Structures are given as structure tokens and as C-alpha cells.
Image (cartoon, rainbow, N blue to C red; front, top):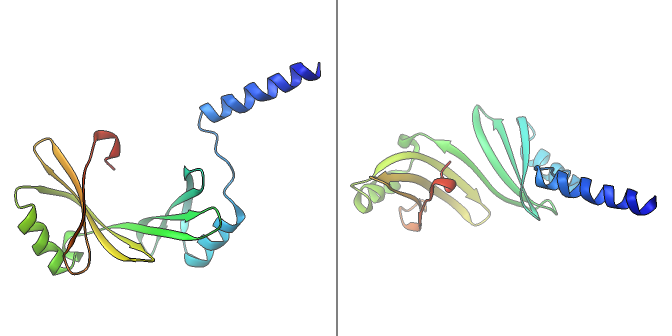
Length: 150
């Protein structure tokens, strides 16, 4: 009977994992989040990887996402912004380097290494995510597949 119970538990755990069962958010992660965003509302957690967690929430009238490592280390915070909120140098660089592309959305990404302005742009079927620093320097250019959009 013990073997049957162990087998049942193994199947149950495997089944829950296959259907998106998530581990509980580590206490250190929740503490770090609450300290950084004490006024956050409607917090929803997802596990990004084995050791990284992402919170989606509303704060200061905007939708945000913030990523933390298992030990509570803050990694990144992102939120969408309006085009006019991009620094002038970023807008100029975007138009110079990608003049034939349509801008679909833009967001600000803050990390301990600084701030990046990320834009999703499109020309025909080609979709890119580009990121600029505050000076308008292109820091990242990545081709997006359908799965990576939004």
C-alpha cells in the first residue's frame, strides 16, 4: 500500500507541474517587493525561472512589472510610457536608426545598472525590440517572434 501511495503522490506532483502549478513565492521576495512598492495594488506573481519571480501590479496609476531573485534581490522594474515621455535623444535616435518602422509601444526599464527605454517596432512582418540608454545610444536590438510579443 505504501508503494501505491508513493506512486500516487509522484503522479499527482507531476500532474500539477504539467498544469502550471507554481511554487509559493519566497518570503524574502515578498518582503523585498513590499519594501520597494509599499503602495502596490492587485499584485499577481509568476515564476519566470527556477530562481526569478515577476510581480505584475498597479502602482502610482500605472501597470508595472518587477522582477526579483529568490533571495529578494531586485532585478528590474518596467512600465509602459507614452511616446512623448521618451527623452528627446531617444526619440531622435529612434527616428534616425529606424525611420521606416512603426512604433507599437514603449516602456521604461529600470535596473541597478541604470535606465533603458525599450520600444517594440514593426515594419511589414519584421518586429523588433530595441533599447536605448538616456543618451539615445542603441543598447539592444532583438528580432521578436510571435511568442515573444507582449
